[in-house]
Amino acid sequence: MRSEGGYTLVEMLVAISLSTLLVLSIGDFATNSVLGSNQDYNKTLVLTNSKEAVSIVARQIRLARSVQSTNAIEDANAPVGGWSGAAGTGKPLILAVPSHNAATNDVVYIDGFHQSVYTDEVIFYLDSTTHKLYKRTLAATLPDGYTNAAVTTCPPASATAGCPADSDVVDDVANLTTGYLTAGSTTPCTSCSPNNTEAVNYTVTETRTINGKPYTGTYTTVAALRNR
Image (cartoon, rainbow, N blue to C red; front, side, top):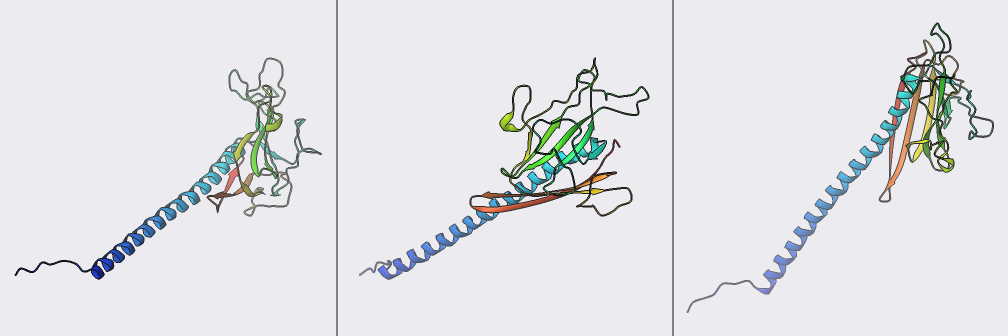
């Protein structure tokens, strides 16, 4: 007689159980790997957004002639009492930036000796309701024969064809801190006026919730005023 080999029912059940455990383990490993990669990506995304926002602010600081405590150009959409640019948390940053002629892109001088220039105002402000960081532009009135390259902007809700919306620099801002440095100082003042400021310390912290999980990114820069 010839015997025939095979598997018993118990052996098959054991094999199925072990296979199931192996598949579940591989699935869990793959899922955790994907989740970990997504979390790393989300962290990088939020940090990159904060860095880009600070870079936009830094470019304007480098172009500015001065940092101002209040706006000198009238703003019909300013907060009650006008803009106040003292250092600190959540405070607006008010920059006086040289005006340029739209036709030639040249700086427009006030005097023939090219010592004084017309300046526009660029204001970075945090909307505490929407947690968005905005950039507002207030264009200076130039003499006849010149057209200002800058265009005054308005709050998004009040924007028109003649007054475009303020630029949305970054969303989900959890914290915003401005500090001023004067000649010879190494530590930014975070509770003083911007008088005689030579450089600005600017920090943006963004907190964004993605798929129910919060991610935070903080970026700081120190930018010097190159047109003082």
